[in-house]
Amino acid sequence: MPETDLSILNELYDIVTDRKENPSEDSYVCSLLNHRKGIDKILEKVGEESIETILAVKSENKEEMIYESSDLLFHLIVMFVAKGINLEEIATELKKRRK
Image (tube, rainbow, N blue to C red; front, side, top):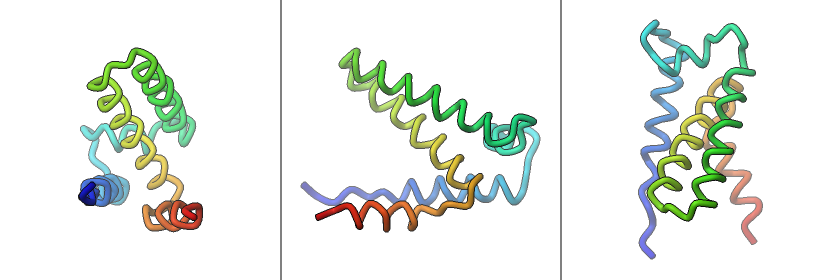
């Protein structure tokens, strides 16, 4: 299997980081990062998207699985940016587990 280009994850991370550093009122990302509930709002979205991903897998609808998994990855990236975790740290941890 050819190696997949995952540069979109880095691009998305950079966009979310930019939204954090340069807030905009009409940005969904900013509405999460600056929500009055703080990190709890982002965690609610991660939880919601996790459940929706599970339900999509249970339904065995591949398009829904891809759609909901993409939502989950997006909200995980927002959470990483909010907590100062970069994708290299995630990649390093995953590499440690590969044996």
